[in-house]
Length: 414
Image (cartoon, rainbow, N blue to C red; front, side, top):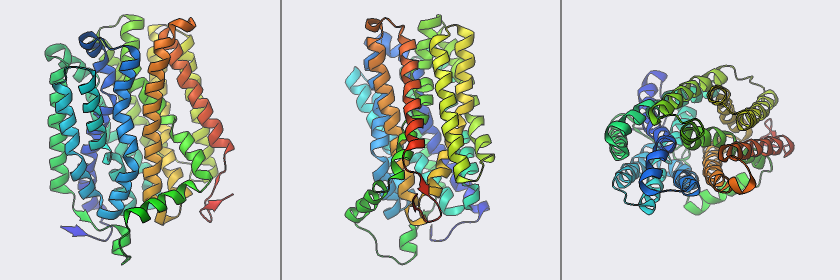
């Protein structure tokens, strides 16, 4: 079955939910390091820097492939792109489950990152193709909430499974879940003819597609968007997906299962937040951009307080507060959609997503480096890590505000 026209909402929803299942597995993989960190450190003797590299490997691969996944969807459609890539996530999870050292763990993470690369981009592109533009921010936030079921699994459930059966069993369960998600996409999602082909335009070559992406980077306002996307989601995911578990275990002496409970709470709050921010999108481009910048600065303040005010209750409350505010990031999808003409939306979203996950990878790697050197600077490990995250958020907000702004009337420059 294939189609070249937008689907009715009634027909589109089951397909969007099937794509969301793949996104949910991606959410599980990108946050699994926070719970796997203690058992991996115990079994393989990983240093903080090695742990940061392990967590970053997924996001380097995920982010680096976004551009090519966006081109693949433009040329071949999102169904074919997802079905081709996602089996690598299954293979990567299986490889991780039988890993005998850091090298195999990292190779598994890279395979998982490549396999998951089209997951959320496919959801956003499907929404853009089949739902009204004014519902884009709200629906994107809703899909982030629904896909977050995968992140919930990497809280208490995964911690309990690891304590009962070991971390390798957890990876096998994730591999099985990924295979089930692939089957759901194969069953439910039809092939939609790419927009250019539906309009009768000749199919682009890869070179032409890459030149189209180059045009995005020649627009000066792209750089402010990239700077912001490189730090906002990265800050939350570096906390929830890497350092939250080690911080609770090492700074406060919590057991792995208890830290899983906190991770679950943070995850639940982070899932409720995006649809709320999407529902109350101010609509005006200028007002939306101000809200994005102000929320980024607020999150930077929360990380600074977490770094300086030590205490279990304080850390838990502030981590939950970061999760609550983090939903503002969904507004940047609407910001990207408004900043470019319709013909560029697919590639603009892929560039934005690429910058977002390269930012996650760089922040997780960099904070691992910071953690390994904190003692030499006379700082507690997590104080140094949290201050580094706050500094990155501050730089991103300044760049977003000071670099050229988009002219949304002409989709050019101010």
